[in-house]
Image (cartoon, rainbow, N blue to C red; front, side, top):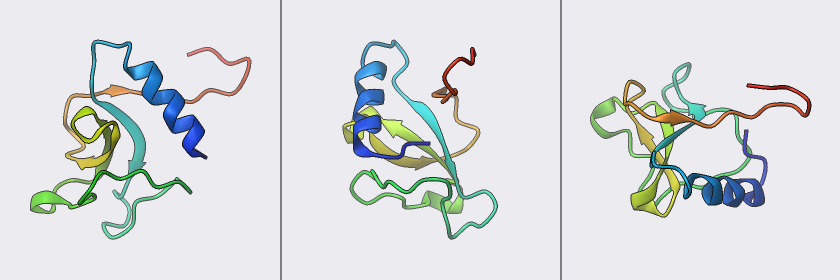
Length: 90
């Protein structure tokens, strides 16, 4: 989803305007617990991913980590960031 640091910085600027503070990114390790998949970029917060209690398999942008990525329980209540192709509506 995020192909470069510029796109991630753009998303951080957008979410700063929202009342929601945590956002799912779509990055997960649900298929292979040892490998988070889809991105070529890495923007993990310090010490992340840590798979706390062997139960954090999705990734969020975390305001406590300066909007860097945190692995989190996939059933946590967060908003979503979706990427659409030009001309599509969501």
